[in-house]
Length: 263
Image 1 (cartoon, rainbow, N blue to C red):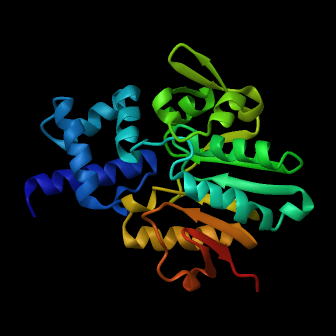
Image 2: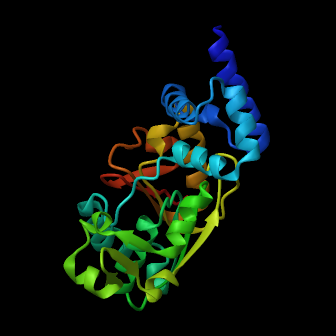
């Protein structure tokens, strides 16, 4: 094994011991390339020196988390899938008939995803009470999410009616209205290490699995399945099809939507 490889593997061990985040669950080539780029940008010749700097500098640690999580998001990303959610999935969720559903945006990044869900529910299902939890491992990203302030490029897929109803514009910035913000609760959570709450009607986990190893994906699908109510739905990203959903007690009900089979 090369010295540089040992240097990186020791960084992975130290980072897990310090933060609880296990980088071995991420695809190694991608993760090593991202972190090497950041390390070199900061002027460190080794991961050992880089880690020592991270321990002393909270801003640098935040940058590392940002590089790990790749916070790229936008409202109504892959808009046609959100249309399916609105028209076919939500009306048939277990809690909908009871006028109360429990939802989770499990890797919420800077907030576009849970706010999109909030807008859909507020606009199309005004009598439906929704408990929306939004979580992410990156606290810096969640600070941006809680602020609810976005550049116009994040809104390119937002229907004009929705943009007018749920955003206030000030020059080049768009502010999510308080009626939408108050529907979402943000909390830090590590998908791989932390336990999940139970009895969700809807779990959204999009554009996250592509960064994980097959072992990590398998673990997560098991955890998501256990967290869903019977007949609850998991909504995944457009490159994250589950090829054998039965092994997780799930069944395909539309492209990228999987329902938990009730026993």
